[in-house]
Image (cartoon, rainbow, N blue to C red):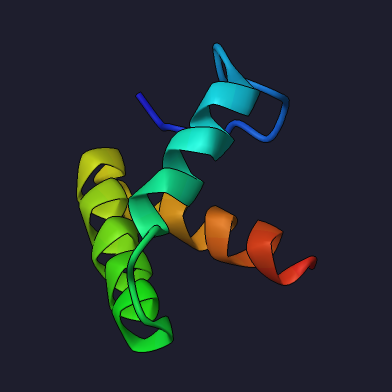
Length: 64
């Protein structure tokens, strides 16, 4: 079965997610925050697992 990127709102509690993300960055320097974001992207990419879906996400994030 081919996976497809979900672009419609899909978070159970978007405000809670945003709050948790901001909290995860608290106390980090700019460099540490960038490193955290890079690690988070890799963890989530591994969870997704599909290069095709990840490529769709790249395009969506770039605004293409």
